[in-house]
Length: 176
Image 1 (cartoon, rainbow, N blue to C red):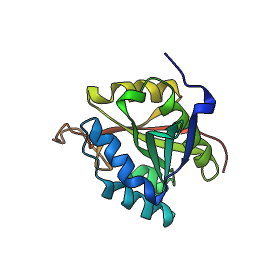
Image 2: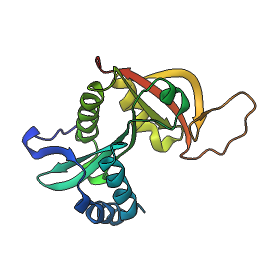
Image 3: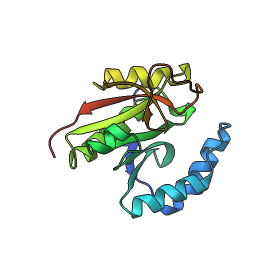
Image 4: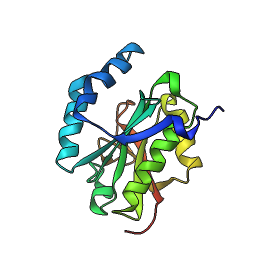
């Protein structure tokens, strides 16, 4: 695995002017992630509902993640566990430690508000690398099984296997 020199990597908050650049970077690799999504994220960041962290390599956008301070996943919401959501690294920048750097920054930020960080991971093979990364970083299942759209599922529930089906994990990150 090739890691980046630390001096080349910057993690910073989302800026209003970033939306078009991020959307264009994902469009260039064939992903539909509209600029409106990032404008909405920025508005939520300004309102204190979400924090968005941007990773850049020598000033070039490489990826991002967001932290929602009040999770849509009911068990996290009830326990005031902030949730890391929407971690994305451009394909060209993967396997270079960027996701880990974003997670390090997110966990440090979460630790200022909560002793626990939460994260949901998809259940399809598309999420295989993320599943492995989170476990290696010390995230463990919360013990409630799979969920969809923030709702814990029960034996006999019928669901569509899509990006909404997730296993939720937690990790101790410090004291609040």
